[in-house]
Figure 1 (cartoon, rainbow, N blue to C red):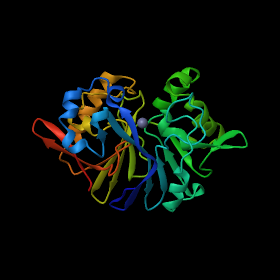
Figure 2 (figure 1 turned 120 degrees about the vertical axis):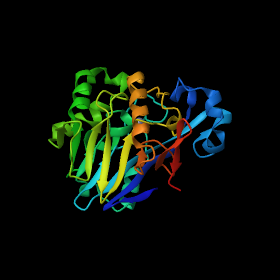
Figure 3 (figure 1 turned 90 degrees about the horizontal axis):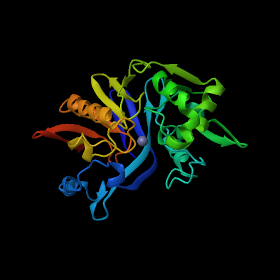
Length: 291
Ligand SMILES: [Zn+2]
């Protein structure tokens, strides 16, 4: 589990599953196997098993502790969710909630819950099953949903069983019904230290979360980049990007914007050590991990 300080902010990764294998051919259909193979010297063993054509993904939440608030960003897959037989998501039982408690946070202590977008692996722990009903996991939190993403899902939620495995119905709507949701714009400033920034392409309302404190900067990049090899090849969108062309342009802009700036990048799916910096490398870029 990573734990870093950004000025006065403390950031911990709360892990649901640390190494989920996925064939690169499914993860990034446009990826070139020969170019991926050429990165073997740093991809193996932590980020890929190239003999089997597999990339590894981590699923984790970021816990932010600011001087004023306890905040969660992206709540993973969640337990007991009906995800139509999905190989990893369906009926998952993980120790995520125990891991949150191990980090010193009880569910009652969470002030805000944010999500970078509303795919099933970013909103699952928004709710948990109580007496056969989905109820907010964090009874005292405001759940911050950005309007563009929320309205996009709302318009199509009955078709969500296809795209989102029904996650909007069991992980967002119960929160709205509880009165705990806070619908904001995509550039919302939560408390000075923590602000949203539009990063559309992966989904229509996708955002990244910027952290700033005492001159230090970090960005929670969500699914703008799924796997570290995409830092070198930002033109390869993931299969889950709803607009792959727009997502590739967003990823390229993100990499160019943050390269060589000292801004710590905290992605949603990079395996441990997870966080790092984007650096220029010839005509492209590389990801220098924290360790
Ligand atoms: Zn994701």
